[in-house]
Amino acid sequence: MPYKDLFSLRIRVIYSAIFLLAAILIGRLAFVQTVQGGMFRERAGRQYISSVPDSFDRGAIFFQDKNGKSYFAATIKTGFIVAINPTMLIDAEETFSKLSELLPELDEKNFFLQAGKKDDPYEEIARRIPDEIAQGIESLNLPGVFLYKEKWRFYPSGSLGSHVLGFVGWNGDDLSGRYGIERYYDDVLRRNAREVYVNFFAETFANLEQSFFYGSQREGDIFLTIEPEIERILQSVLHRVVTEWNADSGGAIIINPKTGAIYALTAEPTFDPNNFSAENDLSVFSNPIVESVFEMGSIVKPLTVATGLDTNVIKPGSVYNDAGTIFLDGSRISNYDGKARGIVSMQEVLNQSLNTGAVFIMQRIGKETFAKYFFDLGLGEETGIDLPGEVPGLVGNLKSAREIEYATASFGQGIATTPIAMVRALSALANGGVLVTPHLVKRIDYGLGSSKVKFVENTKRVFKEETSEEITRMLVRVVDEALLGGAIKLDRFSIAAKTGTAQIAISGGGYYEDKFLHSFFGYFPAYDPQFLVFFYIVNPKGVRYSSQTLADPFMEITKFLLNYYTIPPDR
Image 1 (cartoon, rainbow, N blue to C red):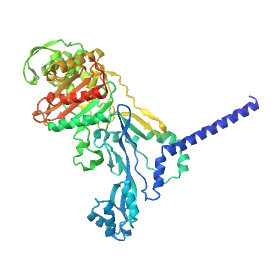
Image 2 (cartoon, rainbow, N blue to C red):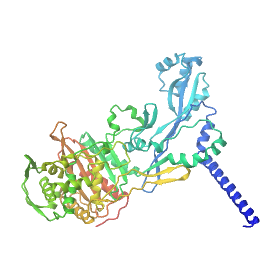
Image 3 (cartoon, one colour):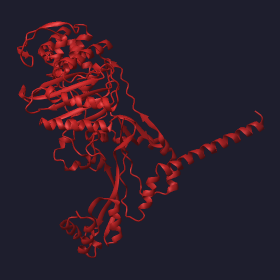
């Protein structure tokens, strides 16, 4: 290459490098001015108010409505600490008198006790004071009184979605997420403490490599699949049901059975994450949807029927002789009412929720194959939902040599699963036979405008598509013909649903005769389902069957969703 061309090439390379460096510096400057502008304004504000060594900060969590509009589910709120230096107080009584006008809840006895600690230069007398009150205190110019800016985690919607969100609290000396999304994604939401006073240009140009390639990938804001209006309605309905029937507890989920995206998840009793320290019973913070297992009862029967269909041992029109009672391994199994129906079809097994029919299907399938399907449905494993503390189901009975264990499992007793694992298994009935992964996070936004959309691939097939279609047709007939005598049928929408009533196990063995778990699930529009709704309540009083407690709440939610999303009729 001629020297002149080589020189020209070098000049172009140098210019390109200069332009690239300038672009990086300008981009970094813009980032500091826009994204971090609020932080610098805050630092400027601290020039006239005392500061603490570092300031709490944390990424935001958002709900998103059906139109994609975001709402803060968890954010940071700013206020002030009011503190006194007892060694600098000139007149404690006058100081208290003036402060109490702006802080009416200031306790007089405690104030003078703190003011008397002459060997202690710092005593906090009030926290989380809003700006306008802080400005009033500052204007008093009281000797020995100081203001310190503080931040804390704030949940604008109170208890809405509390079991999803969790809260931030102290774990020893560490302030971190303790439950829910706050804990599961603590590494994303956590912010590294920064020195309060940092030179603007140093912040702009220092540590470029770390700013671009490391920090922004660790820290982010989280956008949930939770739709706030759906969550509010579901939480309200569940609370009313638990209260009306004086149940010990309960839970509910609304999920897209095709994708695993959860639109609402709630449990009772609930709590307010802004005031969690006031709660006496720490168990209320745990999420029973993922951390507790229950024997679910007859909502398991559609899984048994689907397994029979998938293995070609039955058809919807297949029949058996229902004697009302079966004896296996020295134990007696009866229908819920102990009555015999004679020759009945598989459809009637679902319509009338016949235990003997579920056992008949299990026997036709065979113990080993039956157990394999239930294991494939994930009833004994964690689902992988992005919530902490998930436990696997208790399905050890499906490895027993005794036929009675498989028989009871066929109608939902003797095995216990988490509500979320049951919802995942039931979703396979609705979506064409595939096992989905339930999830709560839609997207994570990192620094510099980068984001990560959470993608969960659902490829594990349990049932054939035609099996899903057939069991759906059967469950639609349950709603149209049998559930409350067809009273909740919707003429223009197909709904597939099933009730469940299970005796509650006694810890030492056996079952209570008068304590039940009620469950209910349904999906719609049945042949192209957008929603699967699941309810359960524990030990409702004065009522026996879940059709009495949960059918109407399910339909209330169903009608709301159909209207809210303007779902077109499918029949």
